Amino acid sequence: MSESRENGAPLAVIAASLQRERRRTGLSLAEVARRAGIAKSTLSQLEAGTGNPSVETLWALSVALDVPFAQLVEPTRPKVQLIRAGEGPTFQAERADYVATMLSACPPNARRDVFQIVAQPGKPRESDPHMPGVVEHVVLSRGRALVGLLEEPVELGPGDYISYPGDLPHVFEALEPDTAAVLVSEHI
Amino acid sequence: MSESRENGAPLAVIAASLQRERRRTGLSLAEVARRAGIAKSTLSQLEAGTGNPSVETLWALSVALDVPFAQLVEPTRPKVQLIRAGEGPTFQAERADYVATMLSACPPNARRDVFQIVAQPGKPRESDPHMPGVVEHVVLSRGRALVGLLEEPVELGPGDYISYPGDLPHVFEALEPDTAAVLVSEHI
DNA sequence: CACTGCCGTTCGTCAAGGCGAACGACTCGA
DNA sequence: TCGAGTCGTTCGCCTTGACGAACGGCAGTG
Image (cartoon, rainbow over all chains, first blue to last red; front, side):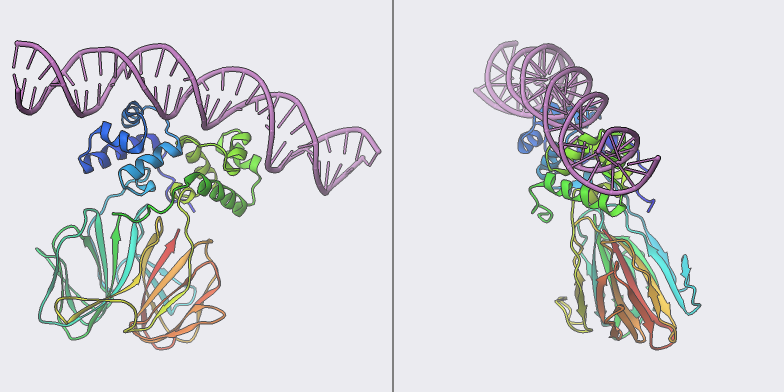
């Protein structure tokens, strides 16, 4: 009930996001303004951090930039993380026979799809990189596997957790038959 | 690159969200307006769907209501889902020894925290309901467990997946020693 | 029954956001 | 070299969001 309260300057964030997303598309300020149906002067002031846009204006921009609305007001940054089975912060229940381990707190505005994977050894699956900003989380359920970035994969056993940027070449290579894992694909 | 483009009426959504979140806290319109530092007339018009609030106004309200900014502009509706091991839509890789099963596509604007759970049989863990809108996803890795809503739990085996509303009483009861599961907690 | 207090709405005023036009700077061809 | 086109910024005008005051409606109370 108290996260996401750290940012007190939404206007500056919006200004940066607008410019970043527009640059990402390669469009000009005038072009984006025209597609959004707003005056380019307005967009210019918004990117400069001046002004306090209305919801309709921001919405039109989010549509023109093809970006989720929240993306403009809440930023994100990925990283790499490996938690071995038994490690990581745990929340011991009142009953001693229940342990929950926090593997990953969801960053603001991320979208996470949940998959289950069953793989056989022999031929590693090398995924072509996905969209920028994608982060993948893997929790190994059964067997053993080499998981992670292609340049330095990590051998995981049951209960191990790893996350890595999905926009870099990565691999999932089962080392035992019927190796199973839960994969959470986080596309911002 | 084309999801989250279905909603064309953000003002109505904001109006509904504002009223819903305010009612959730049990505060009066005047009280929320005072905490947010805005005129209650402004908030009244916003909840009525009239007007087009500025970002600063909406931000102040999101702080006053202690709600993530995006919550006010992007709605969501949960549901219940059970996918037995081996069922569900699968994405067969070019190599036949790799199977990925789509368990849950992330709804817009949801936040999903990833946990790992190891539980022992004997005493079921009954979670008190969380905040409204919370959805929990469980993939059983090892052992067996009774999981789901308290009124009708489901017995899961390795590879089984279930999701349920977290704002209703629910349970996780291990049926074998060292039962392990991956829990994704989705708080909108 | 007044009277007080709070609720949520409506009305008139004022500042601020959004707009269009004009501007200087730059690139690209004729 | 000059003109046309586009870039992003700056400058008044005007619409509109936000404000404060006043309103009617409902308890709770002396």
